[in-house]
Image (cartoon, rainbow, N blue to C red; front, side):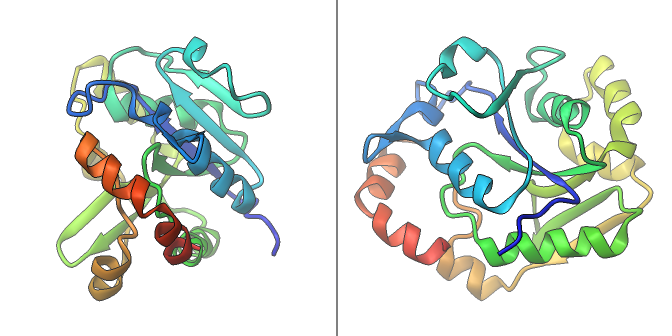
Length: 208
């Protein structure tokens, strides 16, 4: 199937996994770091995939991936979104967290198709019932100036983007599918990691 070419994919990896006690993106399943598993899946879907990190030296095992450090350091996910939008070659990007192991190809393509149809969007946000997923959403470069202003004023909540964005679209995801298939799964503790390490073959089957 043809790769998505009208928007980029950006993986955000801040590296500050406080609950995990270490950089969770470097934890390995079947000998492969989580970050690499997510990258390889997205690289099959998107023409352009980039990774945003705090310190590139920790990720020397990536040889072909485009990896960039945060332009403005220590500003959390919003700083990563800003950096990603600065570096992509497309007019917008689909942003993902580095520990989202169960990304669903069909959902990603449907949301990306919506971006192609809307064209003048600022944000396309995944939503299930009343919960939104800021790191499974699409952001336009049109937001760069406002995001930079927020960062420089230490207003770092991603949700602030939706206040100044003019064209916001909520992409509703079926709650039953979300619950059963864990589309927005991420890993925050060692207990969760051990669970998903054990059942990784099942994750791959569901997420394909």
